[in-house]
Image 1: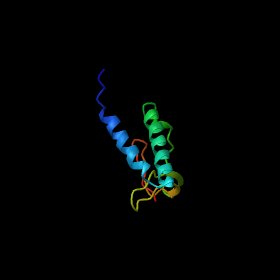
Image 2: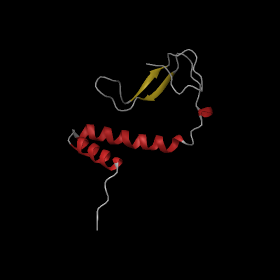
Image 3: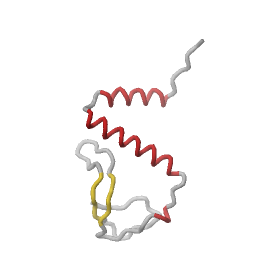
Image 4: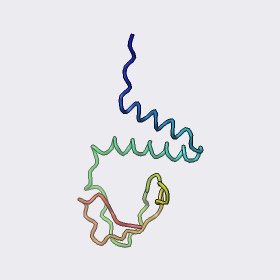
Length: 97
C-alpha cells in the first residue's frame, strides 16, 4: 500500500509545529492562542455583518487585540484611542493608537 503524498498544508503545518516547539514555553502559548483566534475569525468571517459593528468617533477608547507581535510591533490586548475622524462602516480599519 502506498502512502499519500503530504499536501502543502500538511508540510506548512509540520514546519510551523517544528519551529514553535523550539521556542520558549511562553512564546509557544502566545502563538497557540493566536492560531486559535485566527481559526475562530476565519470560521466567523462568512457570517460577519459589518452593520452590527459600532461606529467609533475620534477620541473613543476601545479595547483592541493587536495579535501576535513581531519584533518591536505592538501586540496583545490593549486599550487604544481612536484617531480617525470619519470612521465609515464600509472600512474594515480604524486608525488608532
